[in-house]
Length: 223
Length: 246
Image 1 (spheres, rainbow over the protein chains, first blue to last red):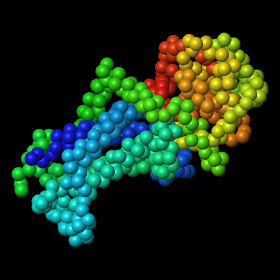
Image 2: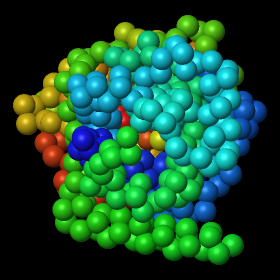
Image 3: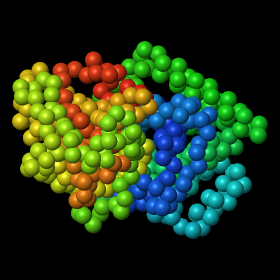
Image 4: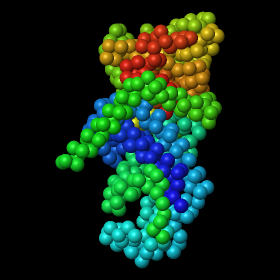
């Protein structure tokens, strides 16, 4: 049996590509107005809960300040990003990847189990025993797939004025358009946080094998 | 420091690749097409006449920020402002059977619509205000559009960075019930920073569509021959999306 299903691998690389472009073009959009607010409205420092630093051009798309070009990239790549996520959810429900590997059982939510996982991670001991992922991995992948990535889509749609007649209830649920915008920003940086930890753990756990398996599928032969 | 240098090189390579793609024929077409995909999706999911949310008066923000032109100094605008816009005229012209030239008094006497809506700037900020004015559909019906008319162009008195501001919408947005020619903000005549004496409200789209300092409403068959041909000041100048519902 392959370690990673074809659907997982395709989505993984598509999603990486999309998230990188969305994040970097998003930094340009952030540079256009560096204040974040809660509620429905906000337009000056007086209402802001955060003044975001100006991101240097080299880490943005298009690499110089152009709100129009950044928005072009952002709204183009939003499509494969959102549809890809929908595809991944359908695939992992159908091939049982979600139920088998990501959904946690009640038993795993015990402090002793979580503590053991944390200690194992700190010791850089990546031998999982039975099952594909340990509790912290399941939690991380579950959060990314179930909360962080979908929330980027939902908060993004909530900022879109043209969608508001349809999604006004969602904007209200998120606390207003400026709250949705703040959450869009917060979830984006939570994804960056995941990305950094994920990358660090891949490097520590043997990057050659990890990356090869995410391309070829690898084989489950440890058992 | 070394790692940051490596990241910068990696990032620069990636960005250069993206820009090369964006400059290619296929790339620029694809980037332009995404705007239409969103518009089509919006049209598919919603009636284009569906209303933008309206708020109670208690939600009005204490100040309504101005952006772009906030105090035009070109042409006779300063003189008009000094005179309280007593001689301001709004023309309705182009592909219409009966061109109109309206005074502010004419506009105030028409049936009015008052709406408390949120204004979203493309930069990211929002403000809430109460706008009053006649629906654009009233003026268009009075002037009677010719069948060739496909777009409505808004001409403005302000000259920003050497170019006259203008904007345009399709007939669906022009006839949207919340599309009004506003002359009041929060029950007072429009302040100069918000577009005195007349401005458009296009509530389903971003702020740059809401043309200020309105002097004429022009029905046209195509946007190609108007100014830079892309349908608006920011569209021509910076490549902003013409459909600003995203």
